[in-house]
Image (cartoon, rainbow, N blue to C red; front, top):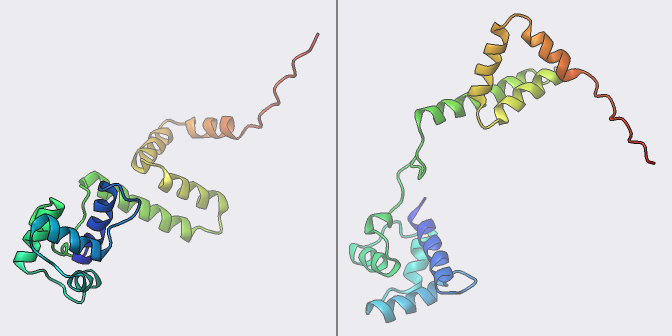
Length: 165
């Protein structure tokens, strides 16, 4: 997230915190900073920051905005390239790679509708790794896959109608 995106986000949050049903405008932010912090920042300076025309804040402006928004001054910089807020475990990364692999495989077998559907279904499952491990376990039990297919593909008989008296 860029500094400009963070500043727009903070204006949005601040507007909600102040009971507005909208974000603070840049002009409102400039007025509030002046009245609450005793130091000024211009609306045009805020606009330059948000548009990216001015990529960095001066240290004094960073400290002023950090105090106003009650955030750590280190938040008010561009995030490094590739930075992510959420924690990713190694297992999550494996799961993501597996899902991409399955989707790619589904595309390669697009002419086989059943296989295409099966690969996409596994990829969309919240735990595709577990699905493949389960499939491996089923296949290790001789005859189980065939019996499961038979049961799962069997036509469902209509429920008997209840007789009214």
